[in-house]
Image (cartoon, rainbow, N blue to C red; front, side, top):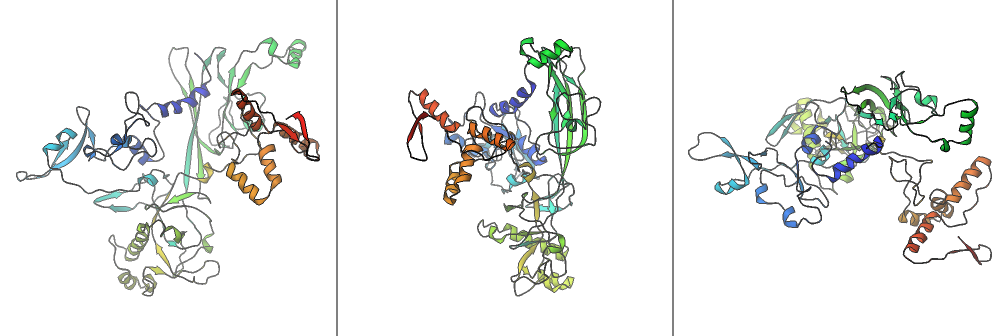
Length: 554
């Protein structure tokens, strides 16, 4: 059976969300790939469901020790049903989870690693080990920057070296104060767009650069084969791959002018529709790679696949989300030139300024310790922290340690040069740039599609949807007394069909936009649904002049 390839491809992710045997691999960063590959689930065919599973099944069991992580689980209805393997757990020969232990006895001379299944735990005396809970959720949302600085980290008993696999940005200096933010993180965001050609019942689809009824500016980047050229700059709506799909057109379905052209001039009307690969909203960038994959074989159904890779150079912007390693996350509120940033007593400007209100309310003082210890390490130039007082004597910088306010220092306004009233904490923390970027979230709509049933604008950025005006937004507009704006929101810009047509006509011709007089489509939909329940609802319009009921049904 042959069908629309775009519709079938759009249903595959939804199918994998329902069926729990397989998922699309999360490729946000290398950490998410490792974590996603170690998931385990009680759901799926032959398993449990989120609504019937009891609390006893979701709870932590003693057999989970060393085998299943008690912290990393899903939130919501699937809590306790979808978990992760422990870091050293493995699958045994008979399909059970095994956890490694060091066997220590009086007879043993050295440490020997022993893997135990849950059935063998009762034959040994297990000692409790050290546990370490890192802020994994934020680390899974990181993106890898273009430039990184290799650093040594010491976490509990582990010594790690980061080689660009985990996103870590080393700040020169940061402040905890109410001021501005500045940070430099360069990111190259690469997206893959692909399209396939299929053999339909009317003939095979073909790749071409001759697409009828399309503007020339949309086809400017295509080569002679109909594929976007390497190195070209593409904008939203541009054609990446030109494709035509044949379709059967009956003689009776032709328009009168088409039949006239066929009869007089013998012009063949197009019998194919364009199914090109277009660049979606927010996908502007540079084409860095194009791959045309052709499968070999004698089968008549031999689809071709074309993949286009587009790179975006994303610098930090107002609205991007950054976070530390202690749950201290926030949004970039303002970016200033380097000379306007606050600077230290030796003239060096800081990179980022945090709001101090985020420290006492969340009580994550780890960020304060990280700032102070990183500052001490930079001042002493040692891998171990030392006192700032000793560092101030060794480096001949007395402002490193000031007895009046230990741990803080005076900084100066970059715009006026005057010192601030209160001293602030200076430090060297690690800041992570998260995947929640403003380029992927900003959205606007001037005109677009409407839902067939409610005649209201669609929902969501992917569908070029409108802005949500719900019940609470209506209350806010009523509270400010903006009656005309409220009427526009609920009629012209929403689901009043006749008012929308009149607005279009008066915009083209000119004149005063008339006020809507009849009911909007959402009210008509409510009446139709009540009638389906055998409830007749008659509604009439009341005249504004003499408040007489107009018996003409709205």
